Length: 119
Image (cartoon, rainbow, N blue to C red; front, side, top):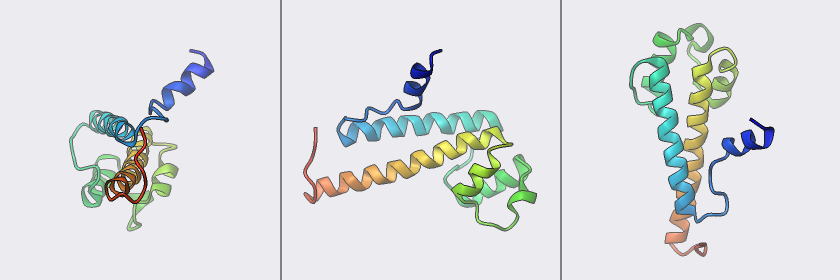
């Protein structure tokens, strides 16, 4: 696969689309990343629940010695993902969730007529 094709695959979001279309793309990508995480770990859990995610980090991934009592931040996950491939997928999911919150904020402002709609 050529380098230009590979970079196009990384960003499947339609950049110049209406915010609702971009939101749909992000939701679909987020669902796919969740399923990949569940497949890799072998169980379904609430990936967005700090409590459940902490248990998975400790029990299923055996990373308690690295995490300890620290809050599991995106920065920490990025560092740990170097040696734990499933965490790369989890980092991607967390980033997508952050993007989703930003898009939802934009859509709320459009709905409240604080910014004009596009598309």
